[in-house]
Length: 133
Image (cartoon, rainbow, N blue to C red; front, side, top):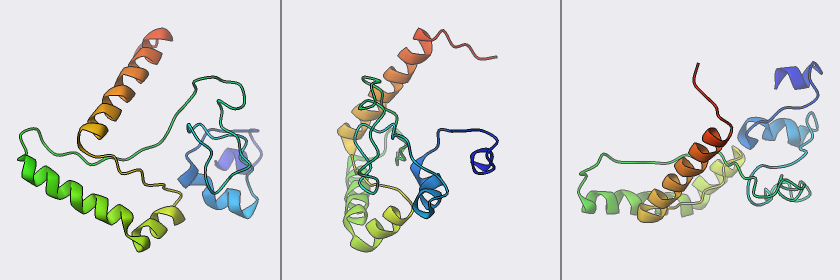
């Protein structure tokens, strides 16, 4: 972002939490969001898909996982705690202030989401013939 702010380059891709302050202050202008849906705080900023790049989606996400073999009762308790935390207005407000928008998928839904992400990125890497160097 320093190069964009210093006008050494004309654009960059960044996660919303890292540039929310500069967008709000007017130092940066958001052109599009790579998320599947528009960002609530930036309703006039279209998605990359809306701009014509069909099926383009990239979200920054954080997750909590436990080791394989963790008792289901423990996983259930942790899930309940995290779900309750994400619904707490004070926590939601602090997350939102950082540009983070809680989704709160748990259990099999979260597992399915991470598997799909793995498959989608794997396919994109193979299709682009990217190799580690």
